[in-house]
Length: 99
Image: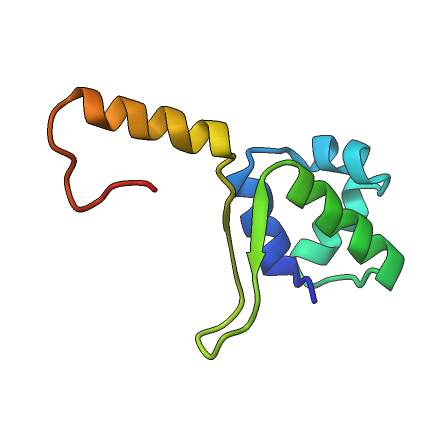
């Protein structure tokens, strides 16, 4: 289930304005604003469209696992390979490697 705060966080992570997201998912920007601030609800189809647009832009939704639901950025295989190459060019990689 997508919540307003998760939607707002995902939109910030993928760097989309409400207007850009509205164009991508076919919703009105005002409906997205109301949903993100808890002032309005979306039906199941609208929620699914909003989530699909955010996922297509690079958001990955993490299900509830005892610590709460969340969202993070998705790295593609080519991005992961490029990051690995860049890290290995500077010598031994540190503990904070991106896989």
